[in-house]
Image 1 (cartoon, rainbow, N blue to C red):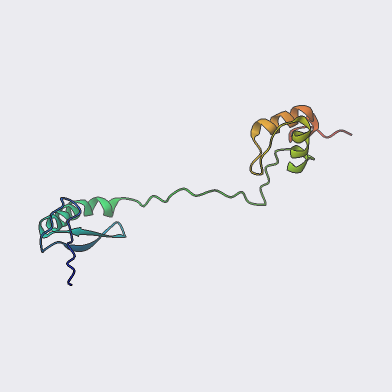
Image 2 (image 1 turned 135 degrees about the vertical axis):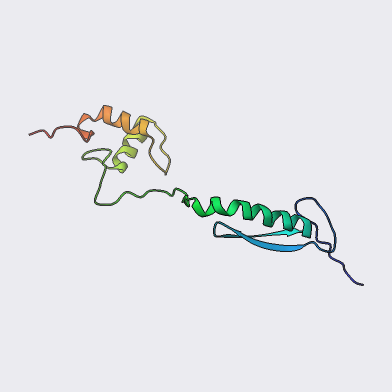
Length: 124
């Protein structure tokens, strides 16, 4: 038994014999789409119109997660660790997950331990 595959134009659903996978590039990215001759011609016309804009445009990179360098520590607390904050929170009945400690918890810890603030002046 023979099997026939019907390729359909992705734009308008046309299923003629001329529909095939068409590859094209825009801004350095490669794409593929199933198109008949008529829509493929329209695509080429649109790409020709778009080309001057793409050539003049700047590539925008997706923002990534920034990483703080080890040479620029930004201490939340002075003289205390996150383990100290978690232990204190547990004693107070405050739930702290395994991830990032909420700012509110740090603030409450600093209220209870004024010497923990990074801007606190050392005693002595």
